[in-house]
Length: 302
Image (cartoon, rainbow, N blue to C red; front, side, top):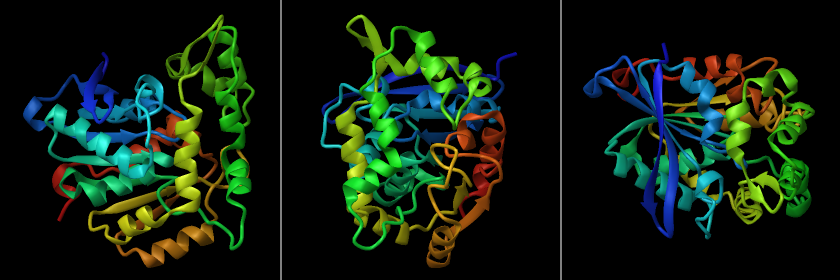
């Protein structure tokens, strides 16, 4: 039997409407349901959390398409972590959710940190999955060169068109961080990401949204640092040892340890044999992430 029912909702935010997916548990009474808010990465959509949802029976999962992505791509700028955090807060308010455990992946982890700072009453605990800590920018580094090194291939994909959905899946099957076996189980995610473009299809993420958000993370980490240094809720960081191309990690272990020493509220889980994507989108990664969430609301906030 299906553990959750799934629906989408469109809620009003500044400038238009925000789309979100809501997975409601089948075997739970409404008064007993706890909520996990799941915030996706910089070029993803709410569908990236389907694997995690399957590992959370009895839990409601709410996941937005962030401004400029998915079916929220009609929402214009300005973008940035504070704007996304306020959008997510509006989503929870519309759904009548007073408090949630919050898990963010990649850029979604940065949004989650800022959400905890700007709207602290909403956040019971934080789980940051390979994101949320400032990017390690070498002194004197060229921001544009760094942006290209980190997300260049992903941004290039946003300008590509594909003749059909099968071609898009084939593109991802050849991606070093995915491969055909993982792609075979993620069909709904890839199908949802596409939108018509003339005679073909393209990713629903807007290049201008992705580049604006990335530039903030690379050149102006002040908002995120202030939010991190103000954390009072239990916060876990999950480190993926391989990066966006199944290569070097997004964060070096030493960089993570320095931040762990700096932030008393932060603990770290070190994973093995997972990359920046499979840490949330593969069944094994989803099980690991689900295990980091407190089993009951009472176990999360002192």
